Image 1 (spheres, protein in one colour):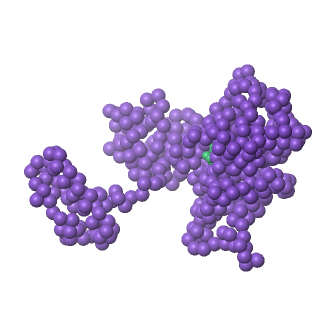
Image 2: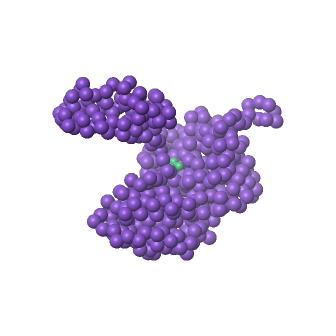
Image 3: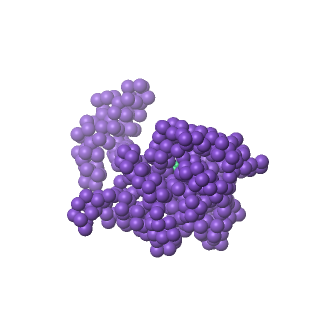
Length: 461
Ligand SMILES: *Cc1c(COP(=O)(O)O)cnc(C)c1O
């Protein structure tokens, strides 16, 4: 049976494969031929193929090589359609970038740039100048002493801040804020890695200002407040107001830092989302340093942003950890363009803000249009009321009213139907609830509606 197998060389010189060689190159086709032959040899070796089986495999050899080439040359990281209704979905890459961000990456990263070059002086410059100016503008001239630096993500921002401001000393945190965010970001662990000593105060549900006050000593370096991003504590609870913490921090001359997590630059109350503190709210209240993500509510690239008192930010900038956690030119380009949109008041340019602002009527109209295009005895689709969520650790209990496509397929469970949708090209990611597959068009770009129709249509066929 082994002798029936052609050589790699014979395969790549087959007339029937010459168009593939022309298209994808001899190297890729040779690799694929080798892969296919190895697999066949293994199957023969373990007795899974008889004479007939080998003949059958050989008759489909061209096809197998072609498939192998396609597989090897397809990217692992690919576009998916987010029909979950979770706007900041960490598993799906969080915030989609604004097109101005993509354009600016293209403009600056395809060639050389002045990333660290001062064009006026003709000498080495600093990479942070590219966003510092815009942060000043967006955060308001009302906060003139505010500086900003950018690192790889918010976890890095918190690590850098703790290490710079509190190494060897104590940081006071409420027991109700010792959170785990997911992806193993746990406040006590980050604290340990930063070489600062965690001083827990209060209880899980109740912490008062006096609890902070009581443990302040000459070892205290920082008061830390952490936003409860992914959960809420309700019932018999107590937490000092931010103003009270600011008062204490001023009185005892100990800086106050807030890990905001999401860090919105717009007021979400206009969208009916309350309880999500904005970056400006915190800084205006007198918090000395805030840490927040670039790819959550801000709607930019993955980044960790530290804004606050210039003298404290300067200490972080001069820490050698800052060099280790710094971001590349792609991030600066995307962030600069995103901030420029904020500076211009052009919130519609930012996809996450656009999605949050979509009205239930607009979503309902699109959902009805999609449902109308799938007429099939196999697939039942209804448009029903539902809720979208912001996600990404922002406003955990805030929901936005939406209209959902609720689909069920004859002879398929909801999980099977959802799995079929994931196997579409591009994959469509939906939620399964109460035995039905739910698709929320709030997080689907309007130009992707057609692809959703196609994916559902294939299942209906
Ligand atoms: C999301 C979040 C983080 C981690 O931010 P990344 O940018 O994912 O590293 C840290 N703290 C809080 C409160 C968060 O919500």
